[in-house]
Picture 1: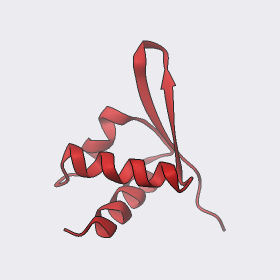
Picture 2: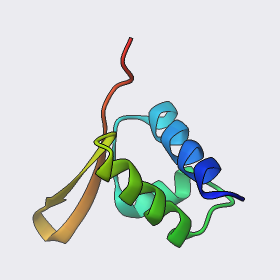
Picture 3: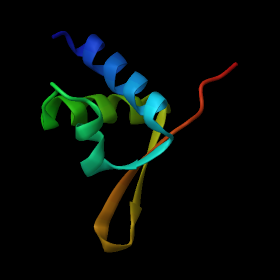
Length: 70
């Protein structure tokens, strides 16, 4: 699977499932993708400003997805 398809898949699965998830749970939202594929996609989406990574107490990383623009 090409990386652009993986990024689109992660973006879509996050938006369909909710706007805020622990990073560990994002892999479960994307069956068929590996942890590495999801992490690379989240890194890309974070760098482009489509998601935010937040570090919470207990060193829990959360992925916050911005709602799609109208």
